[in-house]
Image (tube, rainbow, N blue to C red; front, side, top):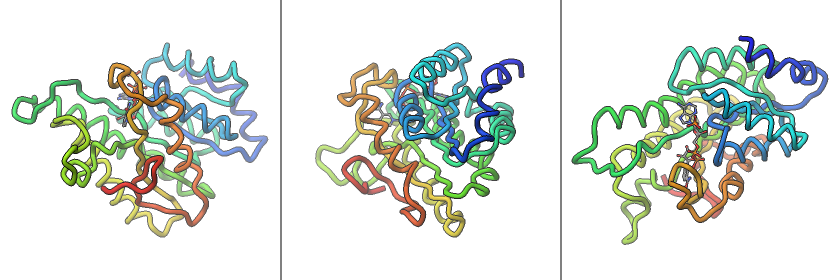
Length: 256
Ligand code: NAP
């Protein structure tokens, strides 16, 4: 509680004085999430950096504030109901939410052959990458329903595309029993949300950042986190009446 107050006190006042939109990015302390948060703040959003580790969260907030950006920390573990409820309460107290970016994700490590994978590892990856998205989205939904141009953006991957995994000789992604299927599951869930929310004005889309150098892949990716963030900035700022229930990357629409 003390931590929340310290992180947010000055910003709360500012929010009530402007029409500024608020965004929440989960897993925003590093990698692609950090750059999505930075990008949205540079576009004029007031951005909550959702992150579970206090030190890393405060460091990220301080770095972006040093750039003059309007950001604040949101303690958030997407696998924890109480943490997600507290995050929603914090945002509600600070005036609501316009844009939710579900970015937090884990791979579960390698190797991950389906014949050897532990059921516990699969459950852990799905809990973060899929159930975490549902948990956070549903907690934030009452605020999003009240927003004028609400957007939900799910950070997925083309390694979760069943079409791309099977249609090509050089199919995308490694053999993966947890990570790739978790992104297929996330894509499927995105479609279901889009169907249910079709008439609400809430646009929900999934995106793929490409292969980005982050902790997730031991910095093997060939794109920068800033390049990876670009598609999500686009999806977060779609015009009213724009697409919903789609899966995209920088090249355009991708098959599910
Ligand atoms: P990253 O640098 O490892 O960042 C992952 C972020 O998620 C970290 O901030 C991490 O926080 C957070 N996180 C993990 N579990 C969490 C939880 N339970 N609650 C809250 N936060 C949690 O990796 P990244 O590459 O930027 O990944 C971001 C997203 O992009 C993921 O969804 C990933 O699947 C997706 N993606 C990445 C690539 C790529 O090439 N890198 C490609 C396609 C899709 P901690 O610091 O506390 O661990």
